[in-house]
Each structure stands twice: as structure tokens, then as C-alpha cells.
Image 1: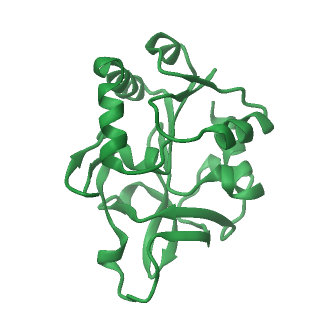
Image 2: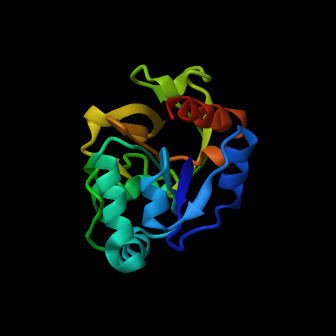
Length: 207
């Protein structure tokens, strides 16, 4: 069973529809018992890090956050998407300094501050190709340099050892990072056409 963590952030219709299309009937839940009985946890997210992590920490008096961390440490397959990816890191510096779930080493920092080409627009929004850095089973159905869809103003830093795919936007943007059973993707697979669906198919094969 696949669960999508429900903590009150984002419209999840397109993600649920994409999963269903490839044969994954995901359950949207905040019930810790259901999460503990699942095979695969997806942590979604859109918006600002501060608001999202606050909602997650307050949901069910902190039980939901602790359940995610505990299940990850037990070896359960976890997938963070977009802001959900960023929440898996140690810290974010979006509108302040906030602690993440510390399931992936590194920090979330502003793209704009690190750009050499100041004419580039932030957010990094639109299609960009995916440069596969390390072999992984999630790439089973795609080829190197296929395009995926990004929308973000902050990105992962100090996580070089975890990067399995990146994209170039003047600087190198970690697109997919991995820490053992924990995967995190910066782009939106549900908005990335066949390539996004095929990446989700790769995750399906891992379950």
C-alpha cells in the first residue's frame, strides 16, 4: 500500500491521478497506523518551507512527523516531491532558518543568491533536462537528459554525495537525491509528461 501524507498542504489531485494511471492506488492519510502499515510513503508539498514544516509538526500533536522519521529509519521507502523533498533536508533558509526532518544531509538555500548570471529568472520554472549522475533503478524507464518540469526558488546544497541526478540553471540544481531508502525529487513528476510517469514507474518497481 502506498500512502500520501496529508498535512494540509497543496492540491494533490494531479499527483494522485498520475499514480493511479501507472497502477498505484495511493491513500491520502494522516493516520499513523495506516502509515506504519504502508509499503511506500510519499511526502508532497507546495508553498513556503516555514508554513509546511509548521503544519507537519503540529499535525496530530507531532505524531505524524515522528511517524515519518521512524518509518524512514526502519528502512521504509520514502519519496519527497518538490517542497516535500526540501523538508527531508536538515535545514531551510527560506524566509529565516528552519529545521527539516534531517533524513537527507544538506541545506535548502536561495537559488538567486548563488547565480552568476543575474539575468536568469527566479523561480527556476519550466522544462529542464535531467543529467543522470549515478545508476539507480528509478531510471529504469528513462534515458539521460530527458526533460522534466521545475517550479522552485530554493535548492539543495551541501548534498553532493546524495545527488543521483541534477539539472543546470547556471548552477547545478540537485534534481533527485537519495539516502538509502529515501528518495527526494525537486521537480514535479506529475507535470513532467511521460518522463515523469516513467520515473514514478521506476519508484513503483522499488516497492
